[in-house]
Length: 255
Picture 1: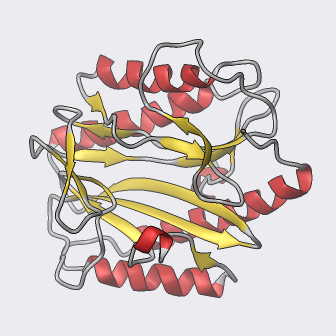
Picture 2: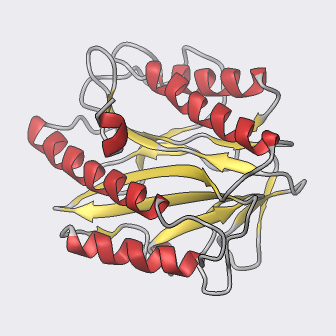
């Protein structure tokens, strides 16, 4: 069942997502060669606590850290470590979540570390664009797969591929709620969207094949062909018109 949120619930979800979007933006300031992913994780945990929340990921199904830090060929769920040091030319995806007043905020973005290759720049741009293509289709009356199809169409028009093994999801009092939101599929299928649904749309896009595998740590998903991957995510509320992006960072709210 897909939950329809009340105005009071939406207000809390809006607050939770604004907090986590701001924190992600504050983490981005520290992204540079020589910084460990552990340092980013510790900062994230400190900022979440200062905001009155709890990390949504830490302890979830045994995940050991506050954020996920996935570098280059790592698709999602990279584990921060003091031995993982960012270097010039990397791309870094940070996925971050908060539990705030009983509701979950969730967002992700991919960043560059210094100067990166033209392919990586294009991969990041197209992945971010595909997220917004999906959000454009998240409006009352459309079908769930309209979001999926919009993401896939945009990505494949640029000769990249969408990951099949990981998907977006409904979000609210739990991090993963119904429905699952694949980033691929034919349009006009699945549940009809209704105002008040809250969804986390998160394209994961590979430069090469869509195939992935999970490393022996049980968490880190990497591309099978070793080519880079990018990841963007917004939590949104379906409305009768354009979707409301709950996790818009402060810098974009000002635009």
